[in-house]
Image (cartoon, rainbow, N blue to C red; front, side):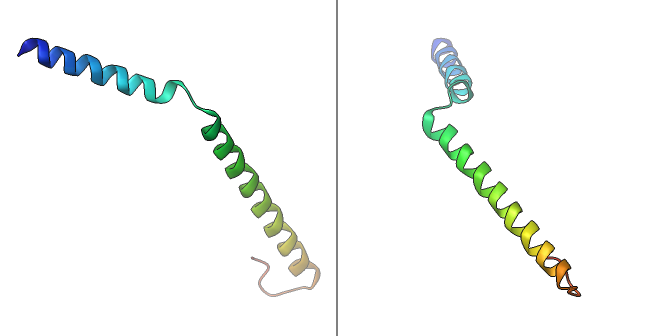
Length: 62
């Protein structure tokens, strides 16, 4: 029984440490896409706010 518990804890430790070690290409691509989408959204919002400010709109938030 002790060997079973030891084996389970060892296996669990290996699985937990392996999760964060290797980020694959898909993970990196996903993070890159997220960053591009966030930057694009921020630029669109800035352009919208600039346009509203130019038109002297009451509400300049987009």
